[in-house]
Image (cartoon, rainbow, N blue to C red; front, side, top):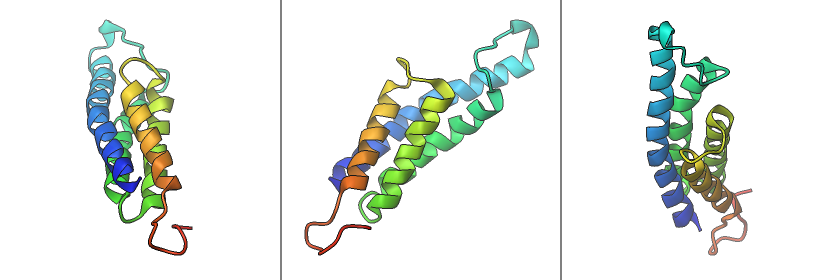
Length: 120
């Protein structure tokens, strides 16, 4: 389960990079060209923050899933929540949210079979 969580987190983060690039660019374009009137987002500063931090959390969580499953799972769940809070659930965000969310749940639920206790 830890390997699957890691792979899902990495894939979700890589797809999320493209969503983040689009979100950051849309806010930046609307700031630099005010006559374009692209009022796509209610909170543009949060969208720019989430565009950077959400893919970072997903990729870092996926990388940590093998050795620190609880921390990696929490990071992936926070990344999925940041994507949802900034962009909502739509055709562009369904895969990053889904992959990071499922990877986070798998990582949190994972325990090493050769140890007496899991990561708690």
